[in-house]
Each structure stands twice: as structure tokens, then as C-alpha cells.
Length: 171
Image (cartoon, rainbow, N blue to C red; front, side, top):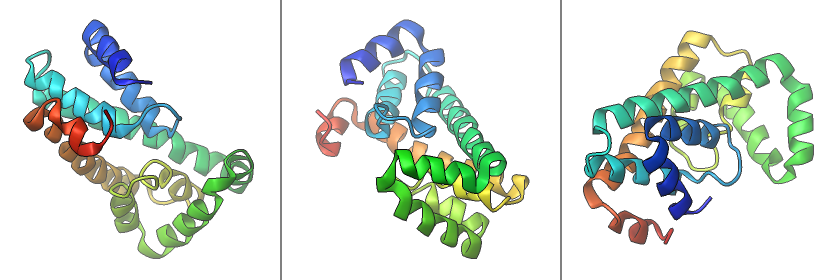
């Protein structure tokens, strides 16, 4: 999904588009890059289309819902899901195995830190579900990590405007 298409959706559908697109990005679906979605949300806030506060609420809520869906997949499907997932996305197998070990050893701090690392931040929820991490700890760690990640990227779009894409190398 390119920036002009995202801008069209954000302009036409506002908060709903932001929520749905961020939700899909946090579910690790291809075509929804955070490096475009989050700053564009910040730009929309800077232009007065929506308040910065509500962009943060919407993006954190969407990120948490997407993360909880992957957590539930890990919890319900566990190892079976991981085998199917890595068969479909073999390049992510090593990353998932490292995540699983890391989450076991680091617990909720591992989820928090994982939410701050590109490529890992969206799939860290699956291993957390697989190991059946305490839901309250998972939600707390995820929310904090999602908030921080989104604040940096939404804030960059808000402060820098369109120049943020030059900095991120997306346009």
C-alpha cells in the first residue's frame, strides 16, 4: 500500500481508517509498513484532521487489538500454529525461535523490549501466547511498548510533516 492510497483512506475515512490499517499492520500482514502508517497519522494530526491525542489512543488501541489476536493464536494454536506459520513464512522461523527463548527468559520485559524492535515487534505476541504468559502482564508490557513505538513514529510525523518520509527513506 503506497502513501497516496493511505492518504486517501485516512482523509476519506479518518479515525476508522487509522484504526483498521494500524490493526492490520500489528497483525504482521504484508503491505502495511509502520514507517509510513504511523508518521502519516501524525501528519494528519498536525494538519488538524484529528487530534494528536486521539491518534495516539487509536493507534495504541489498534496495536493492542492486533497484538492480542496474535497472542490468542499463539495461546490456542501453540506449536501447531508455529509450525504452520513458519512453513508459510520460513524466513521468520529463526526469529520466532529466538523470540520464544527470549520471552521465556525475559518475560514481560521481553515483550516490552520486543515491541520496540522492528520485525520482532509484531510477531513477539505469538511466542508470548505460546508460552501462556500471564495476560495482565502481557497487556501491560505490550501497551507500554506499543505506546512508545507509536509515539516516536506518530510524533515524528506530527513534528516533521512530510519531511519525515525523507528521513525514513520511504518516499
